[in-house]
Length: 366
Image 1 (tube, rainbow, N blue to C red):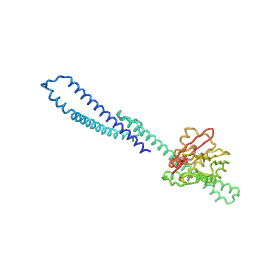
Image 2 (image 1 turned 45 degrees about the vertical axis):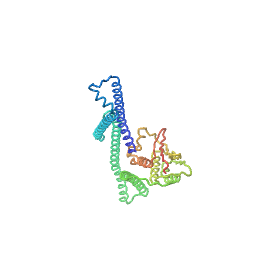
Image 3 (image 1 turned 90 degrees about the vertical axis):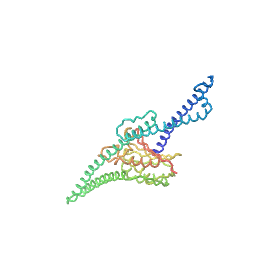
Image 4 (image 1 turned 135 degrees about the vertical axis):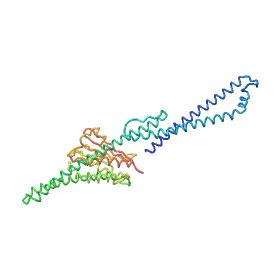
């Protein structure tokens, strides 16, 4: 995409330079023709006796008029050519000097001569995009660093509880069976929380170190969704959620099966985490000529617009508090978006009236 954009930009600049060159050459040709015709006309209106000072010169010019006009035109052509050739080299120097301003962090606009307005607009656009991307990367890095600090701190809490209750079980010889069961339950709960936190660490590391590449194959989308939703039954039951899967009996697509399974896993897990208890998570598939739309809809708190635009950013969590178990490292939706875009698809989110809907579009692959 970037290469095609640069090609279009280079072609437009070349066309502009050639247009100026040929327009100048055309004006010179017209001027030369007018001067020659005007000279011939004026000379024809004068009575010549043959003893005038200019007579031999004008007589020679009249005899070789066509070759002289061609010679003058060629001189003018090369003059115009070298003028624009030198100007083009000057443009290269100007653009090269302005190129160093692209990497500066200040938001001051680049200014070029009026004839390079097209270049100026494009360079300013690239600079603003670079500044924006650098700012987003810095914010993502800061969120990641904050998250790691919070995780490191949070690891101590369940670990301390586990050690404490296991120590009580070891040291208390006369502990009752009920109390023993209670201590074991608390230790198990804290162990599960510790596992979740460790998994978040692994998720962050895996996201940073992995390079995603597609390995497409054909798969029955209906069967895939049926299997994934079945595997989530325990999590649905934990919040007393119903799952409604609305898909035709046979929907085949070509995709990277493992990666798309990961996308659906992340989106369903996200819907469960942010659903009201005793509600329904709905998944429905719509087949269109250009591809397949898969929507994940759940009943939950309405997401404000300013947060809705950021939920696909790396390390961004709707619930920034670490006291809650909802959400993870803030990577699930970012990973899902990256995988979908590798398939040349798209993912969008909408939320209103305590309803959240994420729609995935996967185009048909050849």
